[in-house]
Image (cartoon, rainbow, N blue to C red; front, side, top):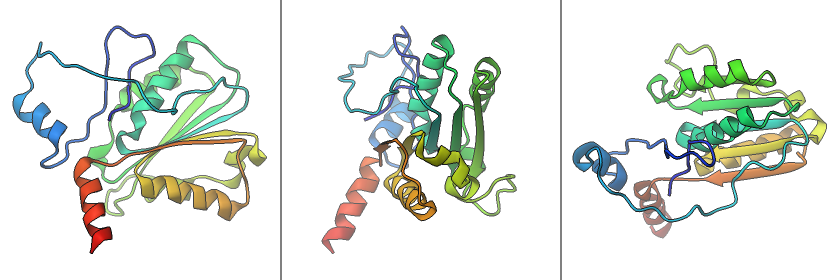
Length: 194
């Protein structure tokens, strides 16, 4: 399953696909896919979509979990809001940071939008190192008057939930999408069985 990174209603569909060693889609994209290949899609499914922006929005993306936020932000570019929007985008290594020119563009056309990136790798030299929650303040949660959207691997989603409990603020809405590769899901299942 992949989230669209393209704007809703766009005639061209875009996705962010992580290159996973021995991954079914990664291997197909790397070794077999050709321009003009025919692909069939089903969906969309799920409930991770932008709600009407009636309060500040905090978006937390982990890795390719950036994809749905790119779609949401492109929608907001064409349907402006007066609500402030903050995106915290975290990855494991510097090489995992993608779509920064697109984020810079969106920042230039969305006056109420700001974002920052952080890298988990302590040796990265990135200005913000560690997890996204290490670079957020309690004030980011606006005393609970905020819609929090989180898209990333399950440990990130749970980490954000624990961080909010730790600072003692419950957001008005907490919407999330957890994802993992088929290889990661299989490894987790094997680990649970042993």
